[in-house]
Image 1 (tube, one colour):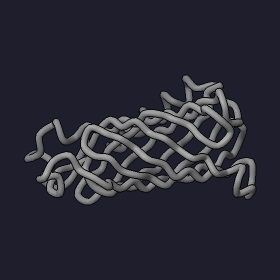
Image 2: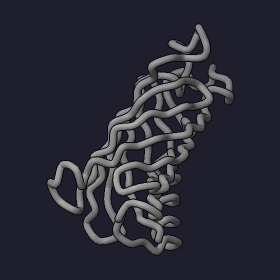
Image 3: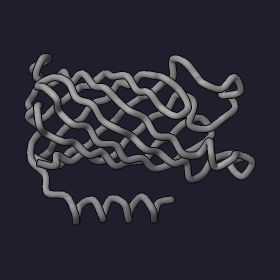
Image 4: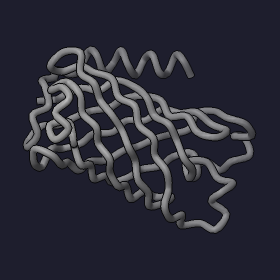
Length: 161
């Protein structure tokens, strides 16, 4: 898994030309890893700024390994979500390099929420961390399934304009 994660990061560094996030019209790309009870994987998400303080986006994740993953159907390893974020960095006025974003997500497995933060070291490169939890699960057996519980995501963030 470390090799795949490293290859994804190197590919992102080589292909991305980024600028600082300024709100409406800007696009953010997050690439990282996801960790949840019993599994780890990779994720990629992108958010499109619709205003100074809100954005919409998509997220895709795939679990690569975990306890008893060989017994889990591949249908439960992949997840895709539509996202809505309230970008509060300018509201909190902590630093123009720092953004906090609570939000809602509607996915293939559940409806939930997330709370994340980004910090940009330069105008186009930063790091992010995010916690996501389901509010409503579509499958009654979802407690025992992957990609349907609370997860912790961490990785790098780029601005793509």
